[in-house]
Length: 323
Image 1 (spheres, helix red, strand yellow):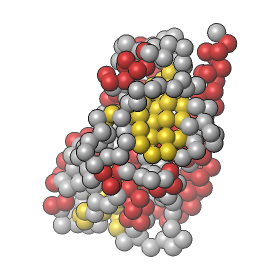
Image 2 (cartoon, helix red, strand yellow):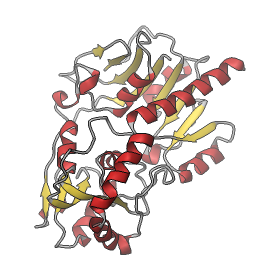
Image 3 (cartoon, one colour):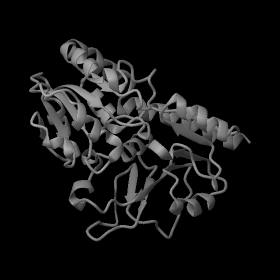
Image 4 (spheres, helix red, strand yellow):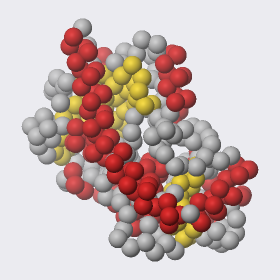
């Protein structure tokens, strides 16, 4: 299966060395990893970004996949196109492939595609999103999907937590609940904050440690429970699956939207009962760890997600060919 994945602009707020990779084994982007796993050797699927800033190379590739940090002049014909976000820069490209089936996925507030492109399949994170999208696009197939973590998110051989709570949230993103945590976090809970600096870090019981994605598992493993105090504009956040893959019980505010039937065991209290639920999860953390690890490996891993998506994509391709 030859896939073309359309991404957004190349991030310009970070050192290029943090997000450039010479081989797929070192890559931490779940979309490139999924495309690589869904493509057979020789398929040469492609991932296109745009607005390549200074310091970025033009491309890198292996037998399965090629990442381009600019839109090429020569445009090969793929079996299917996957639009991540439906950004305006993608519309002209998408509409130039009239005969190729198209898939859309946009997280958070972008969960419903904008008008201007006809998609064969729309992927969503939650039952709420599926209902809303299906109402707006009644003739389009809409499916929930599995969003995995990179394979290097896995539990250590030895379980020796030093923190009560793991809070993964960049201070630059208001939807991540920094205000709520800063205002309500109990002083007797020891919290590790992974992300850019925010007001949470002023709390005496919080330690901040921003690390590269590949080094995050070693920090997550130092915690007993993961929290997601995010608001309703966030959906199936990467932190959820990253902590799940590491075996942390997870407490998410009831505003966070994700595929609850699939991501089993995630607790979703309201704000009033949030920290009480966190305390209960801490007490059961060690007991819950192994079942979560096993369930993630069998149902939510990168291999499971790639297999599930590949089946959906092939069904869309076959349906288009049959019509």
